[in-house]
Image (tube, rainbow, N blue to C red; front, top):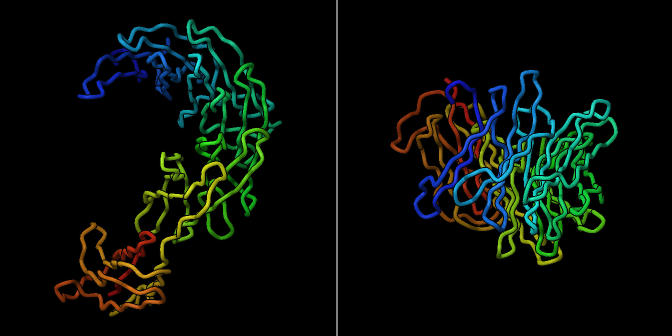
Length: 381
């Protein structure tokens, strides 16, 4: 804005047309890089937005604003919680059934390093009802997501001392009810990124966790809600044993547990990943998704030819195609029904028209009923 740096903006859009019904901006007195972090809407249709206000000394404050849902006018605003001035934007807001507002943010505790702080505000006038600070001694505590359970109790996930953190707090007075951690098999760095609830109140958490020789894997866990005991854990490693990370988790109406994020590939970078688990009502996960079929190529680099090897677990339609690094398909090696078991396909380095392709890097892409696998190839001079 003119005379300011960034301010955080709140918009209401017409659901039918996408037109802007109203918009409001807010910023701190220092006129620095302020930004919105999260928004929630209560039963009264009034949105509550939170944002970070930077100050001239390098610190930051969390601003909480409740708007009139119809006009965009500000019902109340509070900016009194000092938070970490973090470019990742650590802040979450939820509105409970009574209309009261719960926020969570990362704060600095000095001797206790990073802590997570929750504050509950009266939904009518913004009066502070309670504040709770969670700290694990001198270890850093980094929140990554927050939800409310059916009783209005905050559930926060993130990391503490390098492990998954899942913590439950009492919605009435904010006291810490329980916390559980998860350390992956490698004993290194594990972070819970997202949380949702099962149909019987089970707490479902996903993030990334270091595996044994597999880099970071997607880890999905279930906790029973009363004492926080871990019920189960499922791990997923992509085809290339590189970084895989969950960013969101959702339980669908038909009962599928969906986890989305990315799978890293040497050839194509960060690829979108969606895992679907069969979630049995009240008992947790029944089945794990199949990993994509591994694709090998030897020799690689090659000239004049290379042989692909793969082994689908079941019969089905399979495609094996070659692309240049501009994304253009240059050769189709397989497009049809393939039986289960070991398969080998030779490629002579020629395009679909029989022409000899120029030397350079190419991408082989194998698509089966279990997913898609990519392999980078180099056609040598």
